[in-house]
Image (cartoon, rainbow, N blue to C red; front, side):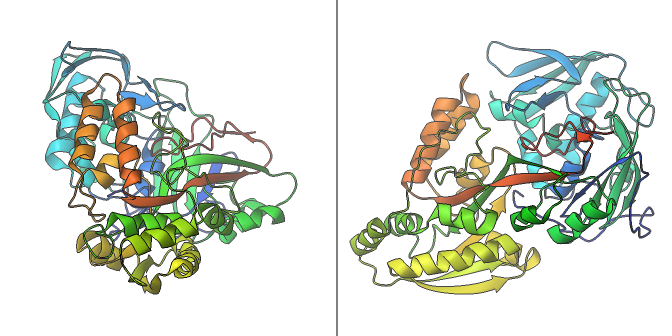
Amino acid sequence: MAVLLSAVLAACSAGHTASQVGRVAGEDALVVGTTGAPASLDFTTTGGAAIPQALMANVYEGLVRIDESGEIVPHLATSWEVSEDNTVYTFTLREGVTFSDGTPFDAATAAFSIDYVRDEWTNGLKSQMDVVAAAEAVDARTLRVTLERPSNRWLWSMGTLTGAMMSPTGVDQLATTPVGTGPYEVARFSVGESVSFTTRADYWGQPAHQDAAIRYFADATSAVNALRSGDIDLVWAMQAPELLDTLPEDVTVEVGTTNGEVIVSMNNDRAPFDDVRVRQAVAHAIDRDAVNQVVWEGLATDTGGAPVPPTDPWFTGEDHLPFDPERSRQLLADAAVDHPEITIAVPSLPYAQNISELVYSQLTDVGFEVNLTSVEFPAVWITEVMTLQDYDMSIMAHVEPRDIPALFGNPDYYLGYDNESVRADLLAADTAADPVPDMERAVATIMSEAGALTVFNQPNIVVSSPGVTGINPTVVTDALALAGMEKS
């Protein structure tokens, strides 16, 4: 599920849950503060961004990883070869790699990990492995994966959580004691509060500089106060830009981009939004720059209305649906709808509530009759909006990397967007040697029909104390990599 979930399921944990206050790790450890605590550590059964953010690149690793430019580079696999028909991948695996429980990483465990996604995962992202026909160990250092058809998306997804290599001996306690090949192992998991990590002396690569922890806060103010008091060393993904002017002069502020496209969704299956002109009227009525200023004080990235982060190779920067109230009014007149009445189902998330007030004003200005209704998130919103699709319009941050096929390639998804040519372009992009032209064409069609409107790409605001280095604020996949940071 590609929505930002801070805690969707009830806690699934045995032990390691005693409450902690103050600093959750020693003075020599790096402590990162953020929001959105995971309810367990098992992302094979639980959706959302919180668990992979904590575990990927820290505990779990993949055969490949995604670098800062979005390119696929070797990791646990040192290289790979692809057959002429682009359906058979032969990976050469790194030697001397072990899991944190001491078991070796080899081609058999790699094949197990791929099969485990297909056979055991219940997280909806398991569909990324559907294209795999077989995974087999040729020998200890050689893994052969056969696909049912060529798929660019599959290899890229192997650098995300679905490509996490897991030990067969470590999958019984995924919720509390994950076992991976990464530079850390989990020392302590306190549900709703923190995850603490210890460095691995036997890590195969460049070891982490120091022990680390992620501590979770209910809001940005609490996190900033903890930074001031020295309880944490860094605030990751700070959600309150208005606090920046109140910070001490010696802190460092860095701003990057993310995969979080905040979308104003319109139910394409329900009147009046089953008329493309009405959807276009909404898009032209919304001043995206004003929304950015209100919610992020201008720090978010305008993607031209498209659901494409700036790190994706098919990002063009084109303004597909510029703010134009007169054009909006004309489109409503062309559609012969007089003051269409709509209801915005606003999830109980601060950014969505702030956006909805501005959208209410702008849509009312061009002739819509707008009602706002607050919907409890996550439970009620997921049931009513996402599952039952009983809504007119809503607002949600979608954070799964490269999620256009999920958003617009499935007419049964909650957006209700149905365009056969777009699905053909998405399939062509997945199978082509160069996916960029087909993806750009798919995006252009989606935006010409205003399938939905991305009001901005969420920024990642990182605030750190003096002496913390190695921070990369731009988020490309789903990982908050701690090992590259250092606290002096």
